[in-house]
Image (cartoon, rainbow, N blue to C red; front, top):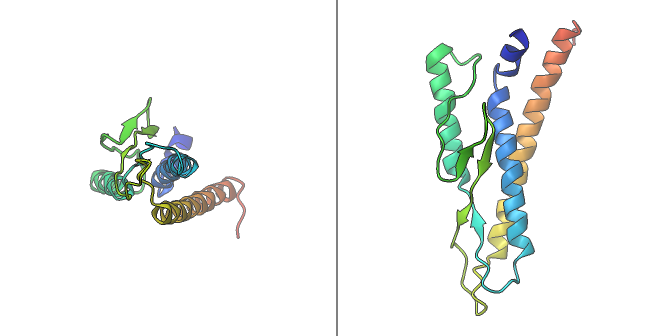
Amino acid sequence: MLIGNLESAGAMPAAEMLLKFAGQRQRIIAHNIANIDTPNFQTKDVDPQAFQEMLGDAIGKRRKKNGGAFGALEWKESAEVQRVGRGNDFELRPTTSGGGILHHDRNDRDLERMMQDMVENATAYRVAADLLRSQRNQLQNAIAQRVL
């Protein structure tokens, strides 16, 4: 029970969810880029702002419930974020973005937008990974009784 409380303490659950989201979204963006010259291909994506709002609501509920220091995040599924199993596991269900320009081959590509999305998403992934690594290092140091 104690280890479970440590794993759900502080920013760890939110950082894990953000890491999972960014990793899954990176695959979606890479798929879009790989099919940039495919006729009739329509790009798909998920809305990172909607995910951030959902995560923010879950963090807000946890703060109201117990001060926010520990506990699982209770988040609501959406059309794009579907719960898988127990806990904070989820799967992204991208929808057609339709934000690009429709070309003569009926492909709605927008390379600049895709590259921008990829860089922003990679940055979010790096930030979440660094935060999670820092949190886990602090736990390991505390368990090993090391003072830094």
